[in-house]
Length: 169
Image (cartoon, rainbow, N blue to C red):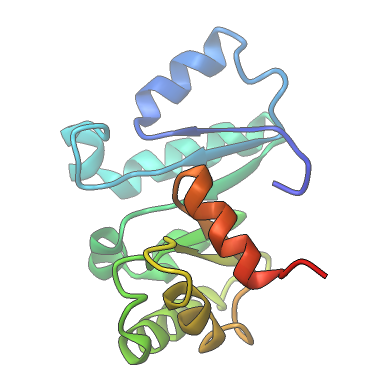
């Protein structure tokens, strides 16, 4: 992010082992992506707020930035406010909503409003280039309230989206 090295973990237990083994030495940013999937252990899913408190404490104790990218179900359960105070940057996974601009706009704005209580936190929105226009149109409905975007996809999809955002001169 911004030219800095970082690592992302889907299981915090793996992040703790990596830190103990010195694998964070070149990273200035550590990200945690808890989701309702097999990559995030069930005990972390069931005790997410406790896991986040441990993660935040460890990352900040090592003088690094902490990025959190929970899935939409966790945001629905706990709210952006619960995540924002523990992270330096919150990524809203909104790619499943981007094809419905009204729903996307309402959901993202509500999450940003809730996260804004912690003024030091930055909020980014994650989209997927399902087609060239849907993420651009959806992002246009929230560009005034977010700090940036994260694009989830493969290189050809990314190239097509970048070409739409920044056409060749």
